[in-house]
Length: 160
Image 1 (cartoon, rainbow, N blue to C red):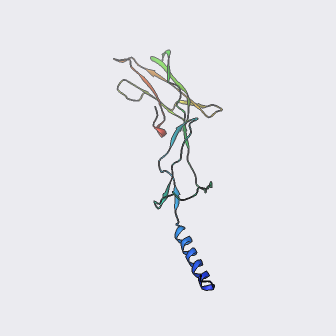
Image 2: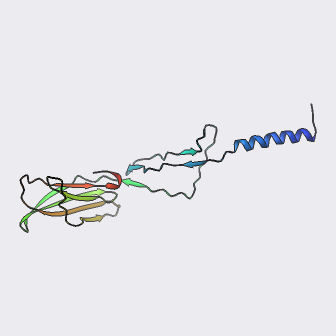
Image 3: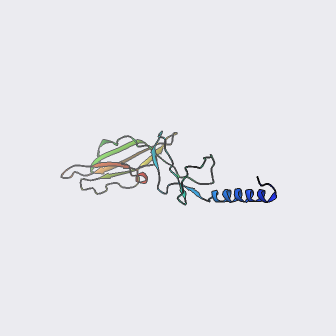
């Protein structure tokens, strides 16, 4: 068996070389597209390594960086309720209301051709839990079809 300072230097050099070759610099990255969930749902934030290397022999530690996440929690509200408010200003008054939305929804009135009847912004109220109620009145004139649609939607997360 060979001993002495020369062997110690070779062993140290071998160990340092192996340690250096194992320490690859990489980043843990998340998705670029939004992840949308309904209120109360669990979500999984997918991530990957850059450069594309195997994480099979790696150990995982919990840590965080100063990364900012934008979280959209959706709550799809109630179906719009349309009420007839009677004759007003030479036409018929209609009221549309829907509640329990998050984020804040849009409300639009449409005629039978899909053209907007909305005049101005709807009334919006936010309750103590952060859910929105939206409502809007329109005055419509009699048409061939007398068909009118109230649509409540959330463009941010493509829900209506």
